[in-house]
Image 1 (cartoon, one colour):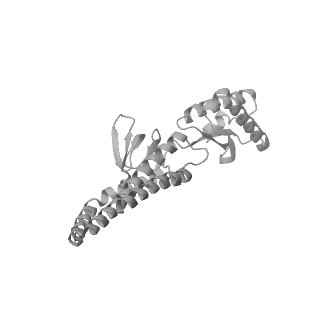
Image 2: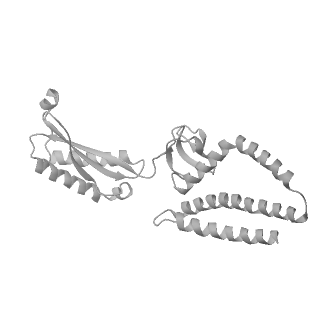
Length: 256
């Protein structure tokens, strides 16, 4: 009877874990392959833990039904289990932290991350640790429990685009010209693979004697900041050459 109950509970637990994780982790717009990898890792860990508990209880029940005194076995197992748990507390901490890393999708394979202890590209992630490859080719193995902070550079990035104009230029004209530059940047064919949205004119960043610095930001793909900045500077130079923007004169720069 105990074996039959254990088999039924094992089947129910496996199906329940699969359905619950599918609802919780399968978020709209998420990477399908990445979501399935997270579900598989978490489901494997939860199934192993719950099935182990179920069959341990089933074995204890069966042994008791046979007529064997299990009191001594339970006491011994308790002492041994306590010793093992004390010795493996670091591993348990790493595995619990790994569950949260996978559940919250803090980082995955292919992401560029900074974990404080090491930084690089995630090559492999398990329930206990993550393997990174830095720019020098060194492989770093970082346990999840030792990570105090996570910086994921692959989620999104912001490129800062500043424009420095003469203070004598009317503010309305300067802002209108910069808005035109933002539109022109969006219309460049190559920008479709580099930026994730329209540039935003944040306003005046600073004022220094005869110059005014306007602050512009744009959401860009990780690692493309230099390319976006180069295109922006080219458009800015063309605006100066066409007279749409007024640059501080050389005398004004030397005076600063």
